Length: 221
Image (cartoon, rainbow, N blue to C red; front, top):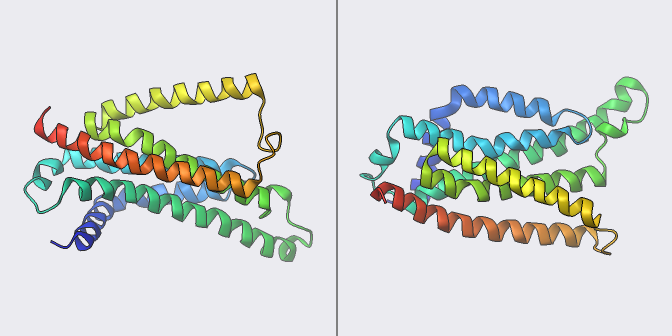
C-alpha cells in the first residue's frame, strides 16, 4: 500500500470515528478563538487533547490489534496521530488570526469606533498566538510517547504530571531570574524561529520514540 494513501485513509478513519464529537470540539474551539485578549490560547489545549481522545476510541474498538493485521507500518500509524494534532493546531491558528482580521474590518463599520485593543489583530497578538501554537505542539510531543506506551488513561496521567512539573519549574525560573526576550536583546522573529526549530526537533524525536513505544506495547513488552 502506498504510504501516502495509507496515511490519508487513517486520517479519514479518525475523522469519521469522532465526527459526532468533533463538531462539539470545533464549536468549543471556535468560542475560545473568538474570545478577547489572550483567551484564545485555551482553544489550543483541545488540539493537544484530540489525538489522545482518538487513541482512546481506538483502544475501545480494539483498533491496534486490527491494525497489526493490516498493511500499515507502525511509523504510519503513529505519525497519523501526530498529524491530527498538527492539523487542528493549524486550523486554530488560522481561525484565531482570521477572527482578529474580521474584528478589525467589521468593528468600525458596526460601532463607528476603532476596534477594541483586546480584539485587534496586532503584532503582539500574532506573535503570542504563534508561540501558543508552538507550545501546544511541544505539549503533544511530550505526551504522545507516554500515551502510546501505557495507553490513554495511564499515559494522560503521566503527561499531566509531567506538564505540572514543567509548568511549575518554568514559573520558578521566571520568578527567580525575571528574564524577558527584550532583556536578552533577542528580536521577536529570532525568538520565534528558535522556538519553531526546537518544536520541530522535539516532535521529530518524540515521533521516533512513540514508534518504539507503540511496537513495545503491541508485543506486550
